[in-house]
Image (tube, rainbow, N blue to C red):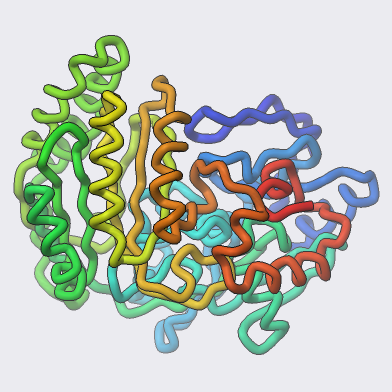
Length: 436
């Protein structure tokens, strides 16, 4: 173990000072580190890419970096089952699966996270027939609070498995994850502007007709950028964007120019409305065929803070209408688009899509712009719509308010009581969302 300087998350809104940091390179080392920390009375928090907007990975005890626990443990092209070490970054998984001719079923729009961190916080992509990343998990290797190493799945300690595959880092340290993958596929991507009213009138039809659907609404405008992606066989002909077009759209306009626009909007808020109008038109229509990770994942170089809510799909129109009215009524100037994605219902205990087909509505603010008033007001819109906040993004609810939104919340707490009665993996944030 070594002393670690004060830590921060990717967004820069959370800071903490662990006593020590450990970077175990094997499961045995990980277990020994947990045992040693407990013997010394120190709390333990694993951390992957620090990409959560909450302080879910913060600690004043031992910070467990999973960076040395990456790569494939084993894979089977016939069954599609692949076991990855917990620190494997999402951006590396397509390359690691390629020798087996496999893909992950779905991916989020950011691929910087570790697989352990992504499933622990409920990371999801989009698609009306697909669940979040945790629904792809078929087995886990955990290090529990007493330093024991446990393998669990739907048959071996199923309650532990159900709690830990979306466990908020409160159940144990995920040393390895077994994923159910599928034969590699390409995506046919179509992106184009669509008026907001048309988008809301047709979104459910679009979600039912296409594999992956999402859109971005630009506040202060009536326009959205719509994206639909449909699967093609892995041996289909790729027709990727030219390097020049990809750089222009995804690097220059979406990152460099957008960063300039955010800084200008921060300095002169009155400029945000005309900037939004230009932004809504700048990213024009395009169509291409490429590997799934290339299509689904984007590079986010402009730092921001985010709050995201899962609501029943049927409530999407009401939610966006109320957010639009809120922004205009308050006279706010919002430079970031509102992002909308979809997910199929699942049965994971703490999944934001538990028991219902869901729409995800995400609001953002530039990292140098105050966000709390905006995010709190959006939360008030989402709560009566049966909203559930993303576990890795900003919200202001506590355990009492969250428990009624998850039918299996008490079952989760019972597993936590069994495997970590002394709260070795707890911190202030988990005390807020799960209770003491």
